[in-house]
Image (cartoon, rainbow, N blue to C red; front, side, top):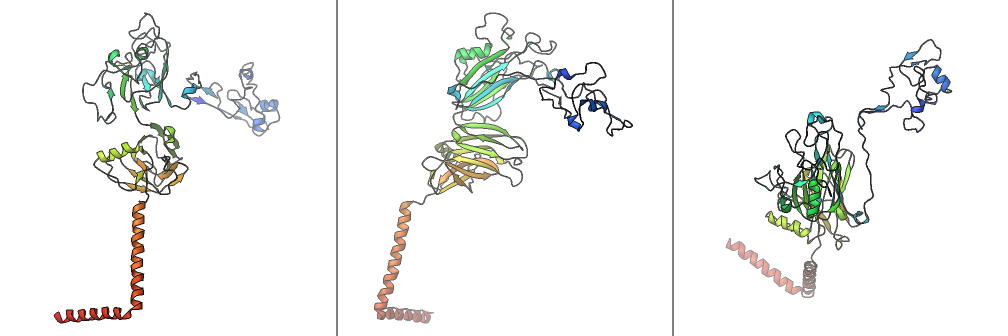
Length: 466
């Protein structure tokens, strides 16, 4: 809904405010009672003094009929909705097996036409056109089409219709950007291509072939008809929530909405084999949390300068340590890892001035009660420098205040028992030797005097030699 104009002259949300209060004849004004709003006795007095909802009312603000002020009011423009774009939708409770799971909705936005024809809407696009998920998450693919678009709008297929489908793009034929997104992961499809992969050779989310066929034809059970451009497919498609079972990066496209007039409708799905979340957080604050509460970020109002895309993921400690080693570095402080590695992107200063935000990192069960925990931060670009951060432990979470992204982890810093015992024994032995020496010379002072004489003789010999 756009260009909605509301007015405080009356309660538009009151159910009794409706079309029955419209004026019966022209120039009579509405029957809406504004008297209590302006401290007048009743509707009759309000109407006598011009406090009535009508075009250009003349109000008697002094109650003397000698001076009235005309208001520039057009009831056709007063409290109304321009360009009603309301959409009806159904919200359903998830099935029991999904209550504790993450479910991502993949939809289609935009409408038929080029960028000028669809303004102020947008051209076709998958939403989100880049989805970050983890193995074990669910993706709910669904979208709506239409048969009532302007018939002269550009587009493929039957005039006036919206249709979409989803197929994996053909395999890579040239190097594409830096490759950092799929580094170490399987890549399926090439985002720069406009041809689909052969269905039997494709893989997407770990879906079965019948499910991939449904995504391609948008018509389970559709028999014959014009399907080359999906004209006879239904306007609504719902694959249902599907569990992601395959890690990797998949690039997909719509075969119909893929010509010069309508910018290509493509999407990307990045599936990690580790937990990952993404959120848009700005100056109004916000929160993000990893599955199983492995980590949480809470940003208060006014901490961030602008809206930014923040991403958080976790690595098992053995993987995090291996990445440090692979970078040619090492970390030797402490004795053992007390948490997983938590990566918060962008790995740079994020806040306004000296502002900071709260970050919580889940501790390993065996380390949660340790009194010797330290939180460290580094950068995954080099793993060369490490900063120890002030922290407190609340339950099973290490809590810090920080102003930037980076790689965070908790180490247990316990003094080795053997070294501590050895050091204590050495100190005891030294004390015993000192005490025994003092007692010995007190009992035999002549021995101490003999030693002193030897020292004096040694000094005189050294001086004569010089």
